[in-house]
Length: 579
Ligand code: SF4
Image 1: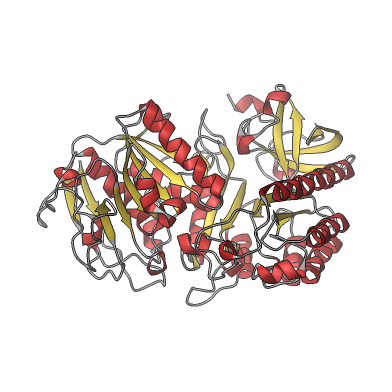
Image 2: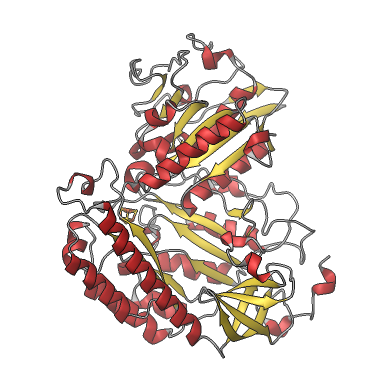
């Protein structure tokens, strides 16, 4: 099999890979791989891109880590618990499959590569800065190149794997690919010399702020059988909330150019009417690992089930387009999506409160093609704590946004992230947050216990809160969240909703086992509705909400299942077509 790495043009877009590179290699046997995902949607989008690239190169996806020859662990480091989860997984996979080469990447790998390199079984630690080069690394491992364990670099004219660092002749990255912290980090531009050791893995990472690549593919199918593809359109963050490690592991804010977003959505929404059994939703899409739109042109295999709902995600979605030239506002991107694609429902994953403008709310209210769902991180409702967090709004600003949404869209889902136990948080600060949440029409909350992250300003604060206090405050907030969610669900009884049927195991559906003879479905306002019968996923159904059971609603169908959200154009029942 011949592999070509094509040069990436650098003139047309702001975001680009480093300088062109060519490589032609021959390898006979490509490995089986398994990608163990952790963390947020942005990390999962990276994993989806990686999977696509590995498949494109002829690797085979293994059903589980115990049968793979290479396991990639795509880590998260947002909390200490996330770090611990990754370390546990590494130990477990190594114990179950000691022959597998483990490549650890993601945010934890970027933050603390040496920590991971010291774990047994790890072959390579690759930071987010060099994540797009993992497919090359996998190929190198598949050829059992002597380079991996040699003190001598391969000759530069070799047909063997040519280390990624050497491809970046213009790199300004303090690049280090080394084995063992005791060895000196090579100087800039020098060839990395991995050295054999029994203790530490190779490390491939650099300064994330020097890396403008946009590495992403829609999250679809896979283990969690996503019915609704998730498309990452923005990465990184230029802000510095004092508790947050994300900017240090994901770098500067950068956006997928609007033409590329439109192109991705057009591909995801194109397709045959009905999928073959077990097909994924949406087309397979090329990894979006540069801003070169030409790369997105279809070299696409069979089209399966067109996506009816797509979720746009990013680290700080409201800053979308501010890095592009010409600059584009997020709201204008949404208008373009509505105008230039046939997408039936667009959902926005999370957006900072001050980016929720009146114009944006009006746009949401103007069409049923945008899900009535706003997720706005709150973190605290104490202005003193918000200032210490370096958040740029105050509780009253946030409240105004919520009230505006509720006035225009009284049944919209309104969710928030809240942190319990930030350093210096007093009982009265906590009480202010509780009272604020009680007063406003939140429909759900994600509650996080504060977790100190190295490199952040908050980690050095003197007034850290004792763990039992953090736990108790988080418990109180979660209990309040349950009450708010239950009240919202109850308020929906008697209403008619158009829901999208989901795969039974979609989105970690905890209700699936309790609802063996029903199908989960999702409303525009982010409610889980169980519909009687075992139905195919990714179809529209009108239901009247009849009751609430546990943490879901029960809906009685008032229409036939339909392929199109334009029910007037619905050809009729579809069950018979779907075997
Ligand atoms: S805006 Fe979000 S990602 Fe950016 S620093 Fe703040 S919490 Fe972190």
